[in-house]
Length: 130
Ligand SMILES: [Zn+2]
Image (cartoon, rainbow, N blue to C red; front, side, top):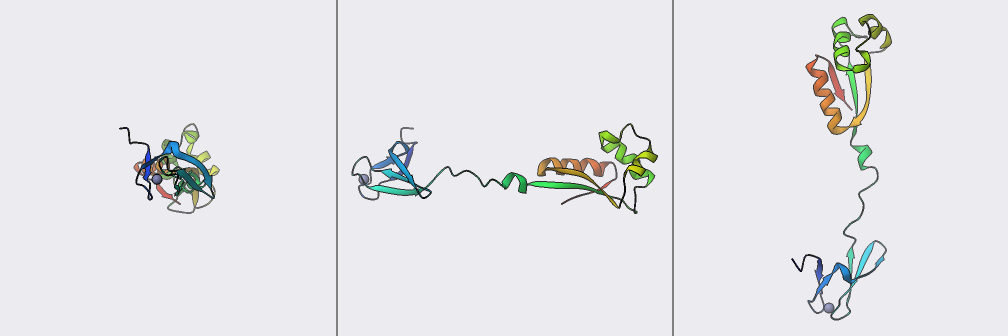
């Protein structure tokens, strides 16, 4: 337990070098000074932050494709079950509000997108993720 913060063993004198021996950062490398012999050990920074774009890269577009050029009555009815904003609308209004061969639900984190796709498919919709 006492050695938990040991970063590396000094290559010069084999004494343990700890996080508390950090003396600075040089060009992305952490510099540790051996408490025993003063050897300067350069190491890759252990706690580099993850790339900023990683969260966005995991987002997926949830898209519903119709069997025809617009939703059929069956598909419009499924939409009403699937998406809360459509629940109060009559089928004709839903069909009218959707133009084109597909409907983009939106962009969601990967896990949420997969859950939405699964739910949509239980209503018989052709849900794809991009
Ligand atoms: Zn040393």
